[in-house]
Length: 121
Image (cartoon, rainbow, N blue to C red; front, side, top):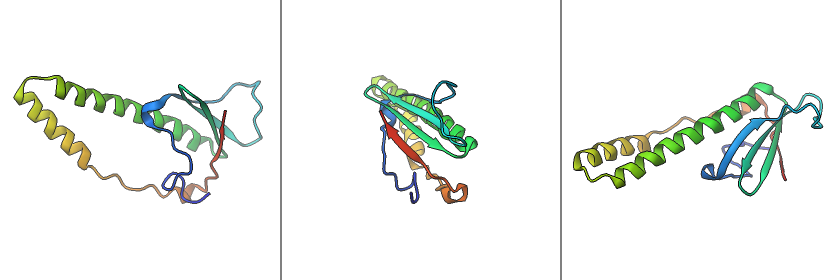
């Protein structure tokens, strides 16, 4: 599968994601030693599975954290442009510039020996 997610073959826009959760329904068919999670948008549900429960939980948690950060950051930008206070605008601009300049290190996903499998409903 390569270097997923560094070279993804399946992209969902963060702003389109409504929910992400582990699938723990006992009536739902699951292959032994696979752990499934669902990412839901307004137009579709995507089911992903891994053979590592910790990584499945990690993905779901990271999606939720990313959604929270995106919501906060979008609110900051919206508030900045709605404000008529030059002082607030300057501080918001400084914070936005600082956040946009952050460089995150790449995760060496190969260390987990992941085989990410994808299904779209």
